[in-house]
Length: 302
Image (cartoon, rainbow, N blue to C red; front, side, top):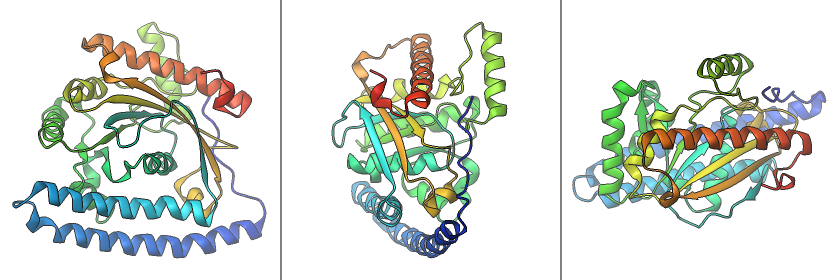
């Protein structure tokens, strides 16, 4: 079953401290995000002259603002990320697949990207509705993020066009995909397990069955542009934090297990790629099961 939500501290002083720290942090990050949008808008006249300069400007904006988000957690709340598994190279182009439990997952993915100098190069699959949201949505438009309806028939053309653009312009990327398609909840896990039984495969206990079409398209469309697929497994201590709990400092540590698969080792056939992804999530499920028993990915022998 999914790890339970992280409980708030019972100590009223800790809760008050979290609130007092979070409010000015949110105010600063919110106002600075609007300023970041302004810089991005100001970069538009550069686009017809130099795509490279336009993207470098927006990479700097993303690296700066996302960097503040990560650093704020590390400095103010002493939030840390315990990383185990494969040591991936600095500044490598990659497709990144991650299990998804809550919005706080994003902050820890960003912390890992920052450690590999890829924070400003993160590309996300984002719901199209977010595109019109000032701040985060507007910012992602300038960062070549991929906006989707989550219906492959309607998303195919725009997704493939984005992949061609990444390759044509040699855009540095970590393309992050939460391939489960949604956050893990007890209700969604039951639905996923029911679907697995209908397919005649063994249900998973700690992750949802991955959605394969987008992943297969990503590998096929970016095979000549990215060097590897990173399989990240994220685990929390004491419960899954919400983004608000993260901002208040109630989730001081998370664990991330990394596996790197060279792109040359991945199959070419679409069905084989889908099976490869299912195998990774079965391994991820077993890895999380052992993590919840031992409290550390490093003790699993993976």
